[in-house]
Length: 268
Figure 1 (cartoon, rainbow, N blue to C red):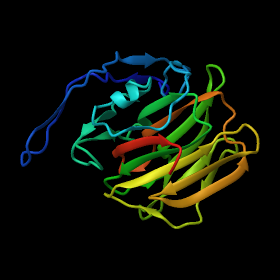
Figure 2 (figure 1 turned 90 degrees about the vertical axis):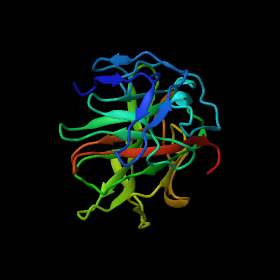
Figure 3 (figure 1 turned 60 degrees about the vertical axis):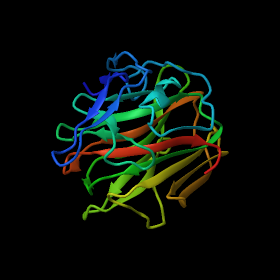
Figure 4 (figure 1 turned 180 degrees about the horizontal axis):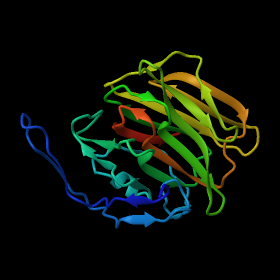
């Protein structure tokens, strides 16, 4: 069932076992455990999670996963994965500190989704940023989404904005924005290839407005790729911001993404 989400517990002791040539690394446990949460088809939210927090999201906020996934659960956020996916801490690819989050899925059986979510009343204006590491090039005939925004005025969510990867036939990757209000992909005129096996930062600026006074912008490693002004950007009263990996129709089919240093701020 496509909308069934098994939200994994956050309180387990995580052990990362490296190859025989490397030492075993025990990351340990953290004190912000949650019970697993499972939602049936049709439940609110792309994560299948019934609404849990409609309080204002305070900024600035950030997490580097040094305390596990507590940066999310301590602020009424959550992390989840489709059956067969994994999200965990890893020290094999780190942007800062000792660990980063690893989101692992395979598109053999179709679309798969594993991400972490902040939810509540989004700031009127904010920069949503995260560092990403894509280990290998992929050709993409479907969707490979890294950031997703959606909103709600009651219990029904609708998408507002996506930041996703577009691939060329050779496997080169480029960022684009999906505008749900217009149901169209927004590409940059700037030729900025996403680096493979190198950390890069994505920042999405969202200035929320239900009328044509809003604005969005996309940045890669501090470079502005796209800006849309004087548009309706968000007609909802509260929303969710997803970071991780949702993928379909990748070749090869595995879709591992590392994420570190996630933030919501009033400045770039």
